[in-house]
Image (tube, rainbow, N blue to C red; front, top):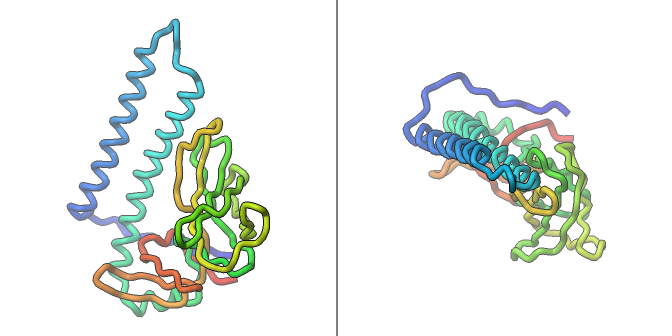
Length: 219
């Protein structure tokens, strides 16, 4: 399927955007300096274990991704703010990718995992609407689409409903990153409000338009 990419012309950042990006960039540079000093001052007779470095490098990668993601979302948020309801109406019927809750109705759901760099394993943590953990499932360490079949802890199908699916990236058994996994869902309605534009997905899940990272034609 063709994925519709969203691009925006160069523009000046608002004070709030500049402050947010500046803080993340500052945190990123501070982390890099701390890691460098740690490497320079380690005891040569008792060097830091390579596994510890792997965990720190994964954290380093996560900070870098956070900076870039924040900048991308700011660009998209500005574009959405400029779009009228007539423009958003063209999204109706398409499939939007976001980290919204998954609506399971008995059919497999295609997820879009995104493990952090250096991850040695990835696990999905599935929780029902009340927040109860109902299943854990190990998946390949890959950004390729993954078909979630809706199986519970005992392997039997889960009841239809909304589920929050968290992707946990691990290095040597230690969780170094945890985030909601993205997936595609059909857009059935676009709503405007004081908080900005939101999309209603098939199954009734509502998600802010700023959390949409891709758009494609429905299959």
